[in-house]
Image 1 (cartoon, helix red, strand yellow):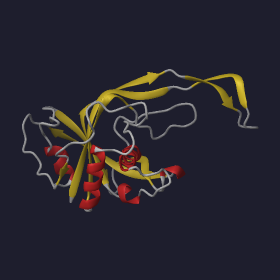
Image 2 (cartoon, one colour; image 1 turned 90 degrees about the vertical axis):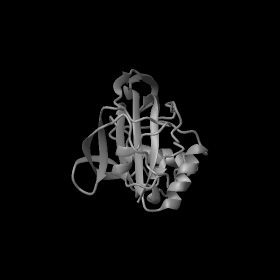
Image 3 (cartoon, one colour; image 1 turned 180 degrees about the vertical axis):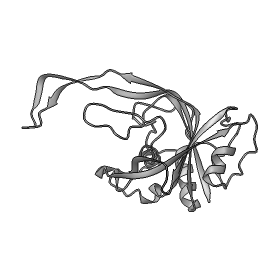
Image 4 (cartoon, one colour; image 1 turned 120 degrees about the horizontal axis):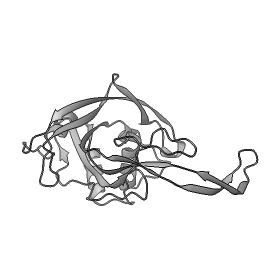
Length: 222
């Protein structure tokens, strides 16, 4: 197995999975649908194209810095009426938006198709379309692409061991979320079809904790 590592760090991030109507939520960690969407932007895949190969990758997240959940107050006017589809120009709707401030994540994507991971790794360095951290307006701070981010370790070992001059591992207890085959919390963020169809299914995620060290052996690049 090989693992591709991505650094998701920026002033603002938002990874919603249960947003409905006027309210837009965020999870405390990147969602799989959001990460796969980011990869599609890097590769230049249209929303109508299949994402089966990317969705089959097993995802894990190392929380290097917990974000602070913040709420943004937004309003919208000219909202469409459900009955006839005409806008109500005199109606204003409050639409709260939640996001993470100052979070930092190391995301791992594990798979056996090395060519696919190499192609994605190269595209993150030179993305076709701009990359964002959950919303188009939330640009990453440092690059998502890590020069040594493609390693020949499995997901768990890669997330635990990665400590590089390009991205230092904090010397504290780290929370790690791993995609599981059946046990754990359920997240409805598994892409089931092209993004244009907006079809997502459940996946299981387990949470573990790892005592970070200031220095560690660096994973071997694939």
